[in-house]
Length: 577
Image (cartoon, rainbow, N blue to C red; front, side, top):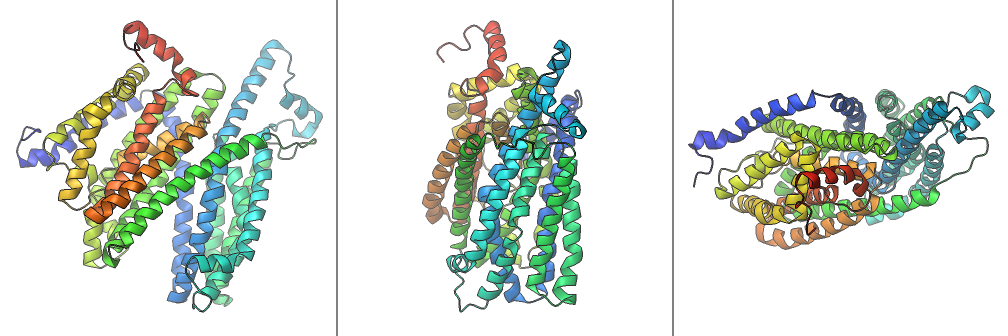
């Protein structure tokens, strides 16, 4: 059955025609307002700042690699341990700080405007600013002081734990004392631990700048620090003969520079240490942070399980899988940047009660995320072979990596399933372009009332899994639109402080996906891993669409006016809900 209504060539290129037509509609809608450009103005500098760290890691790896394979392997293990601790504790603090600072910034601005209108001028920030004279141009945002205080405490705790527990951590990583990697790995980790406090403080400061809708200052600070690291690496490693100790020292010095630049700039805009300093909202931070730590653990466990399952398929399969996974994860940096832009703008609008603008932020963020995902898919489709050749020259490895390229862009063998996928995608894009009323109605009809699962969702999942079973796992490129939407939805959760749902839903999604991987890999091999990762991402999108379309939690107020409009147009639309 040729559901696409054409020959082989037309069947191969239907998606290109659809993408071209959709791209024109997307651009016309995007360029119609200023909010889309505002999202991009925040996201682009953030993406560059996020990309700076992986680039620096590549520079470090290149220099350390000249010392020998033992040193390179030792540094790799140490960095893995250090990054694991950072992801668990530091990233939640970054996301929480962004939301809380954006809320306080928006409320402070609104308070100042109201004070000027009624002539009172008695808000707490104004009183404090007048009392300290020269600081009158600075803002009082308690969330900043609280975040920095928590960051200092977390950083010191991390430094102590990593320094005194380095030998224990090496043993856990499978590097015994008699291993040639043990001594250099422990040495590198102990020195890197000195840089834990500035890293956490810098992340808290970056969260504050993001909350202030400023992603350029963090970009400048990170660029300066990474430049210093690149300059010091060859000097300390080779000229001074310090080896991997020189690599660790240069990294630590660059981290202190980044923290200093960020705090210096932040101190000119915000009162970092008020005269009567009281760290407020700690309970809120700890509660939200605990939820996001749990969420991070769910993500890490799922990805680690997938990698472990791929490793059991053999070294060639694992190497090809790792290349595809690294490319997939690297592209998530752009999606992260879009997520934080949506988070900051939504937090500001939501805290002010400007729900109309909040809805606009939601639509623009999803629209740009979807468009970005399509662009990334096309770029990968055109250049994946070139990207993968940078990581390996083994033809067998590259074949495995290339087989993971296409993903859901190619459905020539799915026959009737294509119709369901294409229809749903077209309807979703059309609803997004049509505006808030249409998207909410679409989400309500297809998610809350179950039409999505029975009419589209099951066929979509079944068709995709069928394609993986009958062909190599073609995943990375085609899932980019899906990944982008999933990441943007995460940012929207954080924008309205919906941390509980973000954590609990991710725990359930991670559990389901992990169990699926455990069951499917013995039957389908590497294909089962990709099927599990696809399930992991699609469930995140399902959960996000359902939450945004629901009347529970913070979203009840966001959609209240729209719901009334839909009900006025169709009085039966919400009956029986």
